[in-house]
Image 1 (cartoon, rainbow, N blue to C red):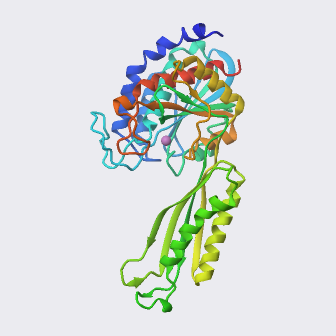
Image 2 (tube, protein in one colour):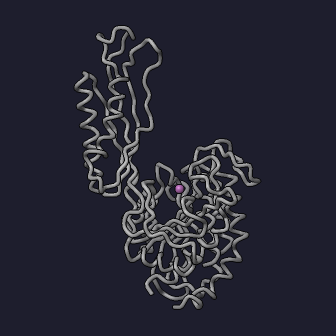
Length: 397
Ligand code: NI
C-alpha cells in the first residue's frame, strides 16, 4: 500500500471530525471526575455511542463502558482503550472550557483520550462497510489509581469475543504536537507504593538518652533507601525509589515517638519486583535494629511495567510513518518511569501503547502532565483518531 492510496480515502472524513472532537473534549474537560466516579463522563460516552447505533455495556468495574462493532467482513477482534478519569488538582487555566468542578481537573489529557476514542467510534459506525473483523472500544475508569484496567479484565472485557490485539495512546506534552513516541519492549515502568511506620520511644527534647528518636531513625532510613538503586541494582537497570511523604513530630521540644514514610518505586525489569522491596526492607530493618526502634512495612504492587509487543510496535511505527508530517518524526526510544495500567491489558494481549505528542509552546500548551496549568494542542485529536483507524485497517495485512 503506497502512501498516497493509504491516505486518500480516510483522511478527509477523519479531519472533518475535528470540530466535534474538540467539542467532546471540552465538554469532558469542564466536568472532570475522579477515578471510579466517572458517572457523568460515562453517561456522556454512552449517550453518543447510542446515537451512533452502538449498544454499549455500562457499569463495568463501576464506571467503565465497552462497545463492540463488527464489520461486514470477518476478521480479527481488536481492542482500543481510553482512560476517562481526572485528577484532584485545582485548574489554574483561564480558558473558557476550564474545569467547573472545584479541585478536580483533567490535568493528564484523559479527556482527549476519551474524545479520540469517541471519534474512532463515530468513524467506524459511519464506515462500517469498510471494517473487517470486530473492534472493542474500552472506556476505562481510574487510570490514575487505584486502576480500572485490572477490574475490567476481571469483569471479562477481553472475552466474548476474545480480543487478540490491543492499542492505546497517551497524549504527551514531552513531545511536540503531531509527533509520535513508540518503543518496542518496556515503555513505562512498574509503579509500586510503600509505607513504613517507625516506632521509637518519645520523650523530652533535652533528654535524648531516655528515648528512641523515631525522627532521627526515619531520617537515616530516607537517605539509606537511595543506596538501593545507587549501589545494589545494576546501573544498566533503570529504577527509582522516591520517598514522597515524611510525617513525624509535633512539638519543637519533644522527641517524636513515631515517624511515617511513604514512597513509590519504579523499574522496567520485572525481576526487580521481588528484589527491590527485599532490599528496602533489609535497610529499614537494619537501621531500626541499630537504634532500638521497631517498624511496620507495607509494600503494594500497583501497576506492572508496560511492555509493548515487537510486531504491534512495528505496526504502529509504520502507521505513524504514513501520517506524521515529515520533520515532526517518530521518536523510537521514548521511555518513561511513569506508570500506566494499560500494562495489565498488555500482559493479557499483545499490543502497543504509544505517545502522541501534544505540546505546542507557541500557544503556551507545554505545561507538564499533572500541572494545574496543563493543557494540550487539540489539533492532534484527529491525528489520534487516524492513527487508531489505520492500525485497525493494517493489522494482520
Ligand atoms: Ni495519564
